[in-house]
Figure 1: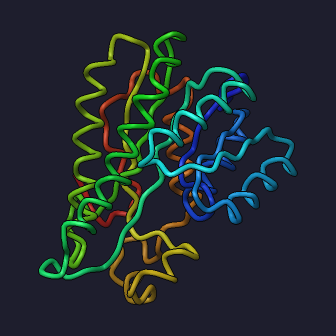
Figure 2: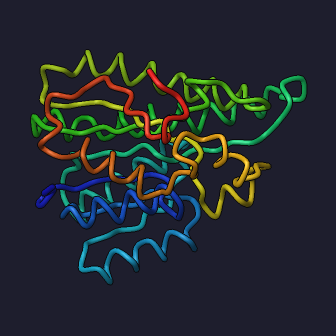
Figure 3: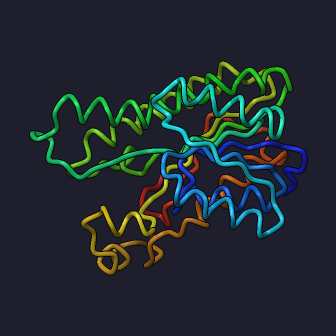
Length: 247
């Protein structure tokens, strides 16, 4: 699927799902701008893209900061021109019993997961409106569809992302811009092993496909949604979860 001459921003692409998405879109031909706080790991993503023959730029960015977003937008314009593909992947989570969630944690999760999606989209959207073409892909979560214990704050923020996707898709439907979201199921990554108290063998045993997801599974869905072939798909929740949640 060709994205030649397109510029894509992928937030939170230091490793895991975000890195896989950035690598896949680069393979599809897009110039990639990685907006990420974790500069050290993001540098590896950039190197991998360049070693494969792609174009890549790293912008240090906290997506809860409009100042950071404006700086990264300007840097991306200077390097690659206007942006017409955006993957809002940056997110934070924790496993915290509901009665232990305080306002600071609740607000921070929303500031990054929903607020970052809102701010990055609002900053980049003028490029897409000017081009009359754009692809906005929001990474939500199956926890927003099926629920998850000790993740009320995270599930609520990702549920907001799904609602945002639908509303914006309708608003932009006649502008040549599509807006969709991908809620991953259990995806095995380095970060998930570090932060997730899950027994992956047990999870795999009850999954219809008997395995956790791979970052590349999510990247493949993003590749399709970013492509010209997906021009009549908007406002959709494209569940990539091995059958964990069915609609």
